[in-house]
Image (cartoon, rainbow, N blue to C red):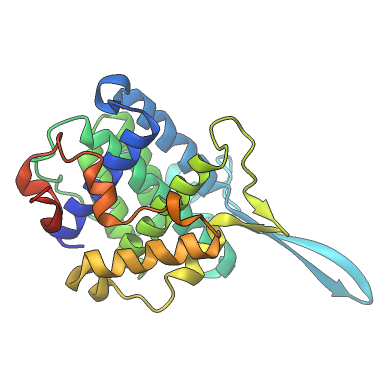
Length: 264
């Protein structure tokens, strides 16, 4: 991911946080996002997919998951090696990508409370992906969001996951959730057995990383419109890249804003 793309995701995160919690940088702490990241990591570790199959004329529910348990093996290395990454069900991998994107939300937020100009840490991937995932939480707990953020991006790249496109889609879905009672618990995430997150994979299908880096604004607006169309959001409630940027135009340095917004 280019620094320019990362800067624009940072702006979108800032604006979403501002929508959810006005003056969020004064009313939220790093601890909020550290806890949120830890929760997302737990969901990633417990990623599960159930399917009903017919065996010998009888229906049976099969659960697919990572199979990770802390007590497997006698040492940390053996424990994390218990996850057979190459054998995970595609639906489990898809859910891991969803949780990885959520980790991007919270690492961007945590880092946004500090100095956004500081360079990302010198982080390298471990050959064991499970150690990489667990290390994201460790970095957050050690208040090293830059390191956690870089590791998230490196893992997305290794998984050939267009995390910037999915981020924009999930960012829009989070707005839809806010519009429909997410805070008071009335929002329904699962309809007809399909969680709202899963539909986002379809929306970004065919959009490449190069597409995002070559024309972030146009491609993002296409993704945003696709999410709104899928969830049948009224035109009056819709946002685009420019409208999101306008939420924080008075709080961001001019050179950090999306180009079209500089004249606002």
